[in-house]
Length: 146
Image 1 (tube, rainbow, N blue to C red):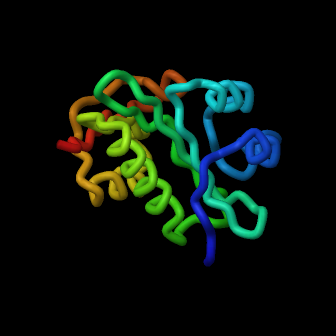
Image 2: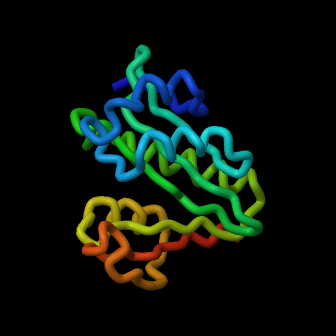
């Protein structure tokens, strides 16, 4: 699979906005993601192959920490390393922002994502009870960059 990871634009957003839940499992509404594109502290990237968006991910910068907001891969493109490449790009971007850490929440039931984050050195710091849809817990994980 040959793809590039580039900054997300409004054009990319328009290509995926109607397919977020169907193709990507994003728990965010399209209006929230669209507003993120105009937030000066948000940085989003897409994995794109011949005009088809295979996945996307983003971070928020807040003082000395970046927070991963989302890493999502199109359902029919999973298990091809796209999530890893997006995570690598987000780590690289956080380092460029000169922050001390990169933090995220991951669903306690999402074992593949937890395994991915641990592979890149993220450590578990705590749990947010019933964070997702008031049912599933979120595991808080952080990667220290310094």
